[in-house]
Image (cartoon, rainbow, N blue to C red; front, side, top):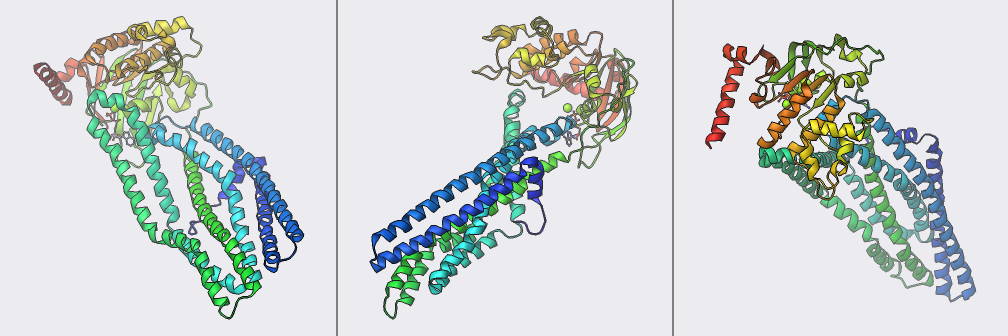
Length: 587
Ligand code: ADP
Ligand code: MG
């Protein structure tokens, strides 16, 4: 319970609950009534024991017993009513949270999904809202019970024999102190670290599984395994440290609350040292029966405290997504005059980065021109391409498409103008037909087949059990990285946008695939403005113009011959590249 900061989680929950927030109040009220009703039978029980000890008639006992049963059944039904209320409210809150999250997520710049990792976002939408649901549905009612019961118990404990009551209170108080020490002020921070570790692990796992094609193609096994393993190791260390830190208070708490019994025994010795009376026996028996209640109440308080910290953490995570600035959607319906792209002094810096990923780049791509971006890894090629399709907005400068600033174009118009096949293009778990058709939902089966043919995919389709209606990822239908890429190219073919951006689109292609992928590109880029990023320099040699990026800047430009003559970075890279091919052939 982070007392250092005031975080009004109930206010937030009520906002999400909207009209259903009265149900939360009603649920808590019913839970309180049920808590009180649950305690009354213990008074009946005391009367029953008194009858038994005195040897009174059984009819009286029956009446007490039945009234206790009635009370318990009544309390149970009221508790069920309370849970019904809180559940209905909880489902509403969860649904509202998810839909406002999703409404926000679709307005976010596409780049956010690169930065944050899709695994993390998925975890927040699924798990953080589920944690909120659990809290409202179950914990709120329990928390109310946990707050009422100790007060009622205190009355019960001291009502019959204050001396035994006092003995019972000793371990309960020590246990309570242990519990409070566990919930010290850095507990909320610890909970955050725990959730962070879980989040990183989950996102690393998702990215790891998704990255398997890359791992296979580039033999990155050790590298990618390291990152995944590091976060599991980190989690393991954190959990161990945390457990060790809590071992004393936790054992103290468990020992105390479970040892109230032992204290009653001591109390029994103390009060019976001058002879035993019936009343003493009655009280001792009675206390033996009610002390487990104290144990249960304290455990509930401990757990509801933990659940509350979990909830606050979950709500904060949801807030973080809700606070990301959405991409400003332009209201204007300006149409680009042609299919050229102009970059004027464009700079971009990633959030939290120390330096620009792209710095002061000015490029003018004419309509219909085929250009290539080359440069060492990390030189800003992908970032530049992503800026052109507004994955992010430039930090400085301006990007215009056919004379219209991309910020002043509606995103629908921008997407009509541009197709892109990125390095990590992914297919979704649907049929090939649906996957290709995503770029043009109105397309007929024939159009889809045409696109697949142009993208050189027919050999893939022929292998599949249900042709283009085969669902990817089901019953062992997996495609290789190169094959997946060809399907995403078919997607771009079908969309047929006038500007095409290919980012290392042949990266996964094996030699056999590569010629096919190349052929597909040639088909795809006819009469189009083409921006191509490639690390195989053989694929960019024929470009009209090549821009060489280094460290975020555009350092050279020209066609292949001109650049070779310049004897600069391009020449250097090309020589390296030729050597690596010869080396491969030689090997
Ligand atoms: P390239 O495509 O040429 O390999 P990138 O555009 O991917 O280069 O990266 C350019 C620079 O921006 C690199 O220094 C890289 O580390 C950094 N960068 C790329 N993506 C991100 C990101 N999501 N967050 C922070 N920095 C990034
Ligand atoms: Mg790149």
